Image (cartoon, rainbow, N blue to C red; front, side, top):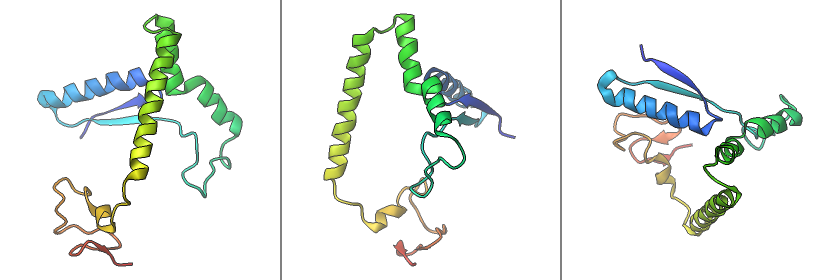
Length: 144
């Protein structure tokens, strides 16, 4: 039996506190703990799933308006007086610049090789004895 906790994944502060609890629990020697973070996906699963056949645009907009994690944290910071509008603008600009720099760096990097697809599948990166569907374990080359 592994104990678990369900967490509102749309509330940044709740996620932080639950993560602290889980880390303390595990580090205290009590063993593993499962965390389920309940979130809402704004978009479909893929290009073939726009996400509009099983929910309305109004539903998505309502969740985005009332439960968005970033907007929620922004409101909590402003309401508590921990930040003012200028602080929020500064944080948002810094985050935007960091994302833009990361995108530029990623676009400038060469594409990974096919062999890189099979790295970090296992903690020790040792493929011996492990099978990945569609792969030849010995050469790590795609077989189909």
